[in-house]
Length: 250
Ligand code: ADP
Ligand code: MG
Ligand code: MG
Image (cartoon, rainbow, N blue to C red; front, side, top):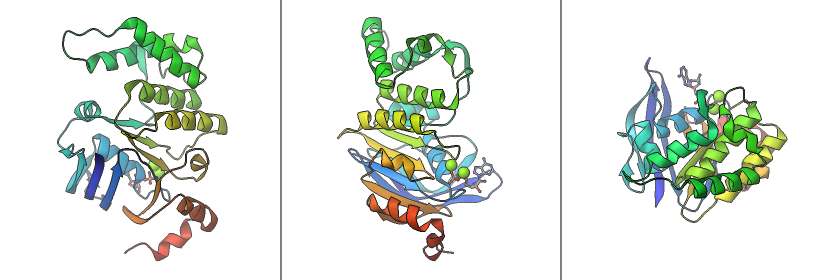
């Protein structure tokens, strides 16, 4: 059981190649981190895996427990068990958080089967307590007027509720304040499981102070240029990304 990315090449619509042969395997039960300088293609990788428009895969493959996901729509990938967080999803005016998550869970049930509302709210409230979220939050429309921290919390809540097999978290360059970071870490650590693989994408080492990855990969110029244990993150922090220049293949 694993998410396997093999020699993945992807380009923008104008033909600019961003991913230049990414190979990576995330087995269920492991947390992997990808670090790397700005513009190295980290977010592009997460978007290509989750099926966002605007990128064309020109070579390579992505399989989820042996199943090719590149031909699937975003929705099909999500049902297959891929979850991408931190995309700053669009606001969903008029739809409350509680109903949004409920609809997503209902959509996963076999036709004719009704989601148990009592069990749903019990589970939702448990998870909100874990994330220190106010109950009032359930009635607010998805992401409408949310602060950056609230959006992060909300995405982690969605992730906790949907229980995906593979989670990809792209910290993005905007980063997180320390409180939001701790909440994110709490959610991620609660999701760690022998049957779930997780990929954390971050520009900074600090997220990894709270979530200890099993494996750290360094991405540079569209390729994974180095893979190691958690100590690699510390080495990067210490030496900076400049030392990658020696590793980067022209
Ligand atoms: P990272 O997440 O590592 O900072 P990105 O994947 O966001 O890197 O970007 C990699 C490169 O691809 C950058 O040069 C970025 O400007 C470019 N890029 C990514 N997506 C687009 C897009 N939709 N349109 C134009 N350029 C893009
Ligand atoms: Mg960037
Ligand atoms: Mg990015």
